[in-house]
Length: 460
Image (cartoon, rainbow, N blue to C red; front, top):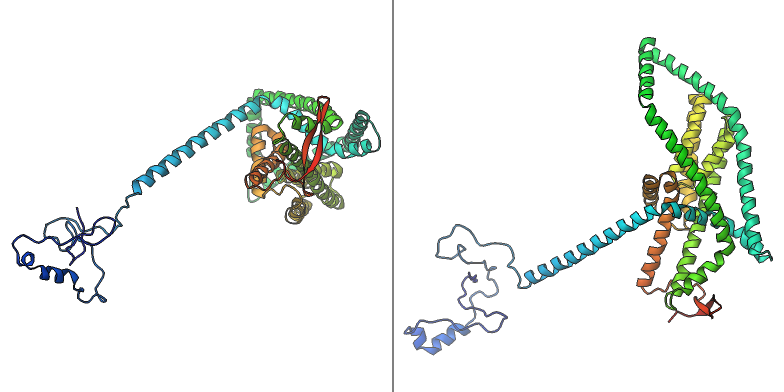
């Protein structure tokens, strides 16, 4: 089907050029007189400057003598390269889909392998976190002439002594006040029962007894499940203590032999990869250290001000609640919420609704100051993860590996961010392996051993 402009009989060949000569039937006057044909083709069209925009004509369109049941389309005519470009786009989409499937399959396999090796990986990760805390005093002692093994042993023993002393200080206070809190909780339940018997609930003792009996029957019917949960919890506690002991042993070796790790790892690679291995190792170590320092500072501020509020209003278990708040800061957002909930609950049981509401306000105020003032200032010097990423990391870690996963979710996310940013800088040609003084690390040595040295400029 051919479309033509109205009032125009000549055909324009594809690709432009001069219009073809009009077809004149043989024997006509126009064919006999060439001057008339020339004048017909060379004369200007009437009203050339004021002519209206031409309309498309064709089969069924304006001016077509043939009858049809449709009008000419108003959509643009397809280009000659539309099919070629559609095939190219489809091919690119298919390649990208295949790559995404391969990457997803690789991530699933890696996750499966890590899950199988989690028993080994967990003590290693915890040992690295302990090492980030213990390395600064160990480095101080080593710089003052202490042997590496002696410095590591002394620092580790002092650390264990501090933890043991803290537990020894907290345990008697908890043991003395738990019984009192239990009695106050029983009194609170009686007050709740009296409130239920009055308006607006108006339950009598018989109805309350029925509900209590139903609760007891439910507990008895699920006694086997509860026992299974208790056994599982006891097993988890035992595994946790074993992992803690292994982590402390690994931390001792990390702080004793840690400075040899990066030279050994860099020596296993080639000269081109060695600067990247060293730089990335240093960045990941500094990220872990910064995470521990940041969360320790945040936890100390939270524990100090919340503990002062608990002490002012004479809420029991001030020191245990302050310690819980401090360690809860190492699980960002969720840990602070759980620690604050415990503080409000104990205030409610011991002092009543008014004091509990005041403690809730103190906890909320401290956490708002921490989240909106302290955290942005501190994270500006650290790994700088968005709050949404922190929440997703904590949620994913907690759903996969429980409390330990919630604790490790944020540092793992920070390490992933470090690796991503380093790779992005390498792809952009920014040379992240070069330090601020314009030097990079290279491996030097012989068959007796390898050492790391600094060289100016970018590596070849």
